[in-house]
Image (cartoon, rainbow, N blue to C red; front, side, top):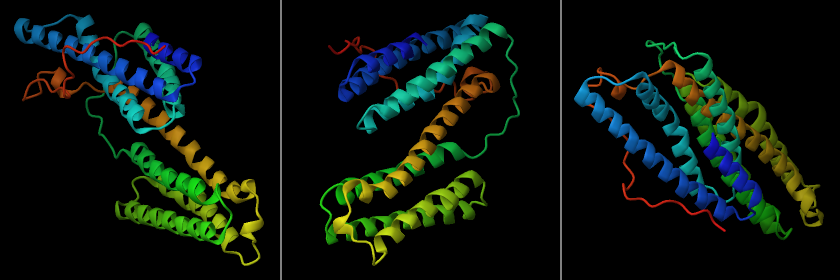
Length: 282
């Protein structure tokens, strides 16, 4: 929690998006490396002595639960251009970590459901797909609607809308082929994205629309509305995914933490053991 608060404070005091991403990525990778090292030490002790105390068991459980969202932070810091998405993720993690801390303090005997079945990753899959739509929408706004209002820009925008329509159609088809196990995503596409997309296409394909006489706000407004809907959904899905990840802390212990794992401890690719400390950008 303290580390996430440190990131949030740094984000609030810096206007350099690149510095924000670099600082979080380097510091987070060092933190993950330190956790991996401590995990190895505990597992070695368990292998040699045959048992570890409750505190060490708890550490293994927590390290396993936070690994995925922390790697998500690192991945996002590499892929995104700005820092807004990182700031949202950090804020969400602060809330979730704080809740988990309260859970541990209030209930040290965690109840685990060994028979829990893992369903399809609907939220995460929809998040990844919607990010692809946003990339195309941003391309239309930046390359066709934000610049000169000429016939070529209008045509490029319409062709971009057609490409998005194709992406949405393919995704809906795939969802139905998978027996509609993720109904909320299909509903969002058909009732929100397609409706707004058709509205924007109709606007630019209307013969009475004089694209060259529209100001920038008029050209962008419809597409911007569609983009806002997608971005709001992405942020909600991200929070749901992080929330679900932390729920596993109370419901699941990975095989490598128990004697049931036949192949011994399974860890992600270790970071360099001699990784140096991170210096906060000036």
